[in-house]
Length: 402
Image (cartoon, rainbow, N blue to C red; front, side, top):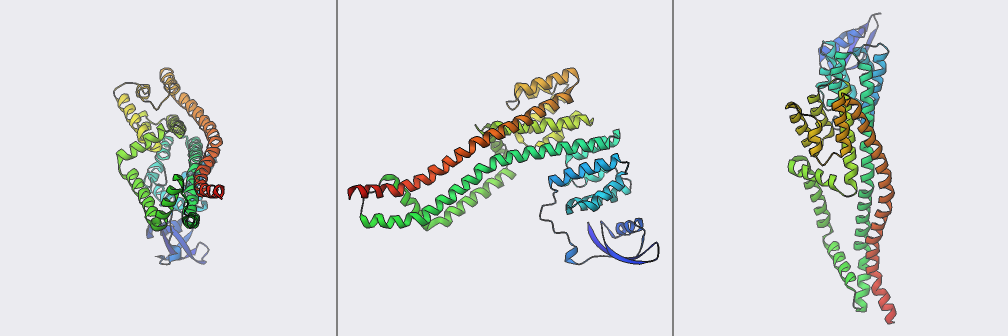
């Protein structure tokens, strides 16, 4: 959206001036006339203060989008038209990215473009799940209930993601803290003891010799060690984003991890089933549902199974068959899906599976947090304690000889 400065007259003849966001000068003039202002002068603003500085990469915060869905549903339920509801929400949202997108959507739907098609122009703001469910709702007329369901789905997915992140963040933070503390001791503390040991000419234990050698290397080449760590991280991130095989391997290994693997597996299943149930409830075709689910879950292991499921359905087979062949889905999931397909209650079965695994994620997160904390503290104690022991063992030997 571009900011335009205008000068015009109101219906009462008063001169008014200000700023307005629009995609073009003609769109700005149209907006002003709709507000009862007869523009005399409309020019694009050149002030840097009127330029939107976006540091978020064009994305909307999850909380802002959930609030938008809830408020949109309330306005539609109250009888407000889609155009007016979009205008109201664009003016009151605190997200600049969402406001700019909604203003563009408002302009498009005023020209006769369907709401779902208008949102499809900005996939960074409006998820594929939202666009397709809204397209289905436009046909059925259940906009308010669909928006409520979308908000609930997005809330669940956001909470699920945050729980997984919080569980995995703690050990990573503690690991980084351990490395920093160990590095500080090796570079700042160990050298002072090294001089003492050399002056005494004592025979040092193997662990002390190794510790001193590492300390001496770090003092001379710490910048190389830091550079190697940073370079390794950059290379791994690049490969994860650009190399499909590496991306697949990393996700496979994460799902196979002894502690975090089952938790990630449950979260992936919960997200898939929740999204699939929401799409089913909106009467989105099954093949289209699977395409959207693959994008929403964004996991190459699951994506492979979903593609097999699409091929299976296209050949006239069942959804259950490819799920049964995959190690990713436990018998509970495949049994529930099979029952749903055979009884015509697939949407209900998918919702039940999603609820079960969401509860399982909650329980697993609580259990892991209670286990990880003492284990990571023990790890920190072993690393730092090992360095301290390497320093003080020779001191005790010297004391006994005296």
